[in-house]
Image (cartoon, rainbow, N blue to C red; front, side, top):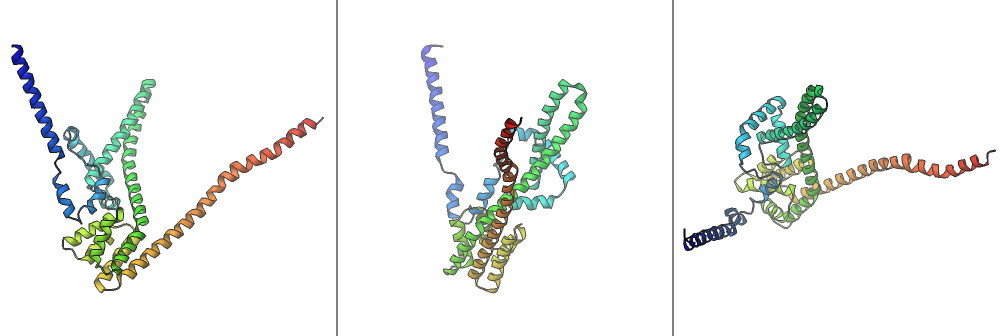
Amino acid sequence: MSPALAGALLGLALALGLALVAARVRMMRRPQLEVRVLPYLRDLPAAPSGRRSAAPDLQPSVVTAVFGPSLTAAARMVERVLGGTASVRRRLDRAGLDRSVHDFRVEQVLWGLGGFGVCAAYGLLRTLERPSAAWSALVICALGFVAGVLARDTWLTSQVRARESAIVAEFPAVAELLALAVAAGEGPVAALDRVVRRSGGELSSELGEVLARVRTGVPVAAAFDDLAARTGLPLVARFAAGVAVAVERGTPLADVLHAQAADVREAGRRTLIESAARREVLMMVPVVFLVLPTTVLFAFWPGLVGLQLTTP
């Protein structure tokens, strides 16, 4: 091959590479369809935003294609052993996780495999030192798998508690905003739309789902009744039931919202006082068992040394 032909081929390859890079950069800079459409759908992005942040975006991969059937079979086995599908579904809804019970069981299997791997590494090291400990290592690996499965379930419960604590913290402000919007002359749906667009948080995402259902044709009272049925917090259920009753019977909604916000603030104040009382008792533990013995020791130790020096 002549140098001129080789140079021409290299130049052609370089030009094709630059053209591919330029086309890819142009495609990446083009706005996606959802970015162009969602600004015109005001009630839709508020509802799934919190759910998307809580659940990772799972993409198909080689690992999923290879181990997917095995994980599915293991998840079904865990489902048969543990059961409680309704409880798991309810906790997933209360935690704001956009996934099915089967996906949660797969996560439990993955957590169990993680615990199994840690215990297997420990058992392998122990077996290399003591070959007779192989059976105990197998038992430890089984316990590690069970501990991983139960740890994922416990973490789901902690996620539910954290989200409900955030909802309780946000509730007074959201209720007051709704009351102000209704008192200013707006209807329940318009006030809900304004609050959802102007606020953010877990309670706002729940109200965004209610607003999305109302926009799709569900009656306001029925949408709030569904919110009261699926929530695990009595105050949110009472709030939803109060709004539904106020909309159905035409009672003053602003007064109801102000009263509920005041009740939540009073309940939070009582909880804070009770927590402070418990912390006060716990603060006495280091004072009694650490500070006081040290003070007594510093006070009496010089006298004891003086007595020993003066004793004939």
